[in-house]
Amino acid sequence: MLLNNLSQQFVVYFGHNWFYPEVRDRWEPVMLKMGLPYITLEDMVNSQIQSITFPALNMEPVTQQRAMYTLQKRDAGQVDMRQDKSLNITFKLTESYLTYFIIRHQMDMYHKIGVNVKGLYWDPITVQLLDDQGYASITYEQHQITPTGMSELSLSYGARLGTYNTFTLNTVYNFFDIWYKNTYTGKMEKLTLEL
Image (cartoon, rainbow, N blue to C red; front, side):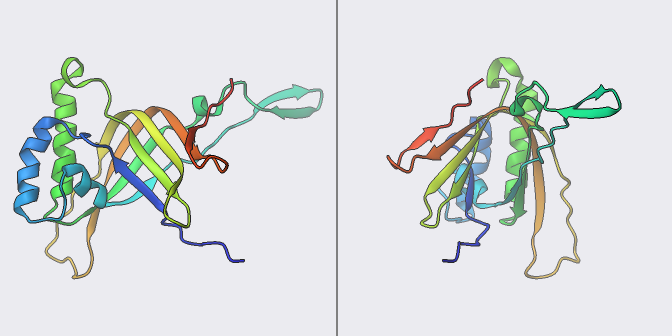
């Protein structure tokens, strides 16, 4: 039996009403005027996601000297307390660079309005890993998202046909949930980690 070797069986998406109302009011008419086949800004931005990068997991052991030997042991902290919680999402720059300006406006509103009006964090970002039939088998939800930066936008008259530019949104998160498909019931269940 051959296992499926497709590595792009994943879906990253921003949930319904993820964008602030000010961003939606400004950019949804532009999107609709362009005749794009999307209903909401979230649909359009989700379709432009090219890749997502989870950080590596590095857990340095604790060392202890015992006579002439150096012993290495695990740290007392939980894995999610020590891991890097950055999340980088790369978007394609098509459709008149619209995605870049939508995300830029969202970041501007996040930093301009402040904690009292918009909240301290962005809504969750969800990553689903799909099985061979296209159904979610594992779902990661990152909560309490804080944007930390965007890559540059480079425009050039020397661009070639058939290529597109990209930009990257850099974020960090505080917590995450993992949901998995129970093979007996077929339902998605939240993975609970015992402390």
